[in-house]
Image (cartoon, rainbow, N blue to C red; front, side, top):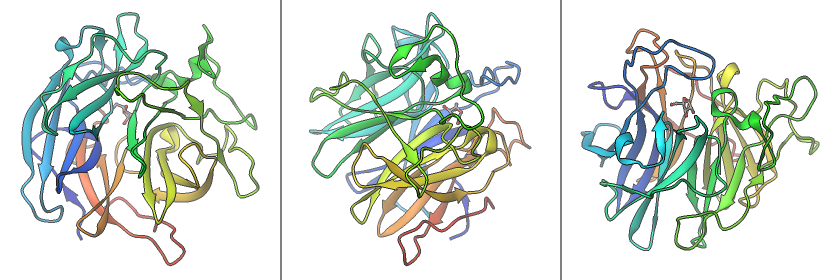
Length: 320
Ligand code: FUB
């Protein structure tokens, strides 16, 4: 298929695509021109609401905007920057897991609940206990267990933590120090809290060595998990080197062995994606800044077909 911009009417980024009740739903961040200056901490991303979109046919179908599903001002604990989110279904209810800064300007993850994939989503009064950093991906495994992957460095604040403890200072590894690791935690049955302390995810090379901080393919942000032929494909953005890469493992906690690049750099600083199977084909949802003439804070959602080769490796793509 030809790459397709999904919603030229407005700027939407970080698209999390999920299939519910036979329909494809997209949960993006909603970019706008807040006037905030560009900085290395993403201060130019001042998003204040979320919309939800659906479609029946990825290649040619109409994209329906179901409107605003949650607003910043309705979240008691959140102060600003509604960044990436994802939605998962459990027992007929839909759980939006999102990230925002609290009044102390610290990122946490929150939960909001709806009866339908379109929302509206009703936010919990407090963030998930023990949550930090950004970019949640909510993954439901075949046994019904739900895992939340998260983390992002620089503006995403992961460098403020060691394990799950706030350091009080920032430590960004350099050179041949191991790169910072994304986190994963299984959700409790009621979907309101983590059921366990978040664990670090190891992304290792073919010798089993964790990727180093100076490796251009190390983790930065934008965790996504999907399963293909029974194996766990963990994909992510490399941030300042602008790739979408992936690593494969045999269980939801890893370790995941680095496999390669999925998407070469797009126009715009950030690259952020999701991968989903719909009606027998696989798709890479992502964004770029071509329609805004390269303005990094005004991104447009896009989709391309994704293919695997005969060894179950994802075929590398260029942004077109
Ligand atoms: O949309 C704001 C931030 O930009 C996301 O949380 C990151 O993944 C990057 O896409």
